[in-house]
Length: 180
Image (tube, rainbow, N blue to C red; front, side, top):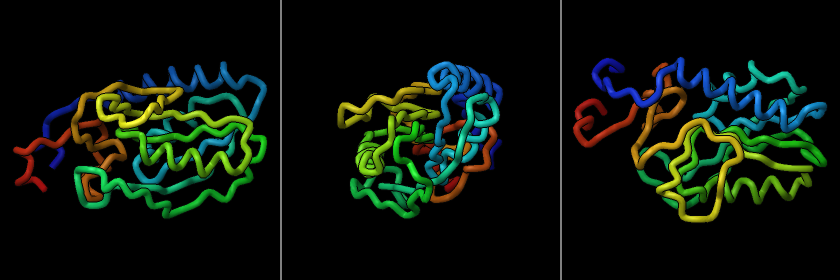
């Protein structure tokens, strides 16, 4: 199925290179400190792996799952937290590692919930940033790539739980309906 899509926005090599650059910036920003990497499931699992393996600062890892999608290409607007992190974030440096920031509404909700735990700071590292769809004033601290208003898939991103396994980032168009 991957070959049928054939539209590649970013290759595995481009993603890996950008992850190394961002990890270097995180190392610089948190030199001598420890960070908690909070992986937003399921989409950012490959991206966090790329970031983590390039970091030299001490890290801890935990997971959170929140969504406003489902089996649709548009957000429902209702945020659901399905899996809550267990790690103690009090007075800690937390970096939420996200696959994509679209409207920013889900992330803004999640960040407000995390702030209640008293972290020293919370930063956001996103693989993809879709600024054109933003409905609030949210800005990510570390951005892999800026993208247009496309429904992206691959490299952890899905449509109805499919296409996560693509080793690159692609996108769906109306012509792709027969592939769905």
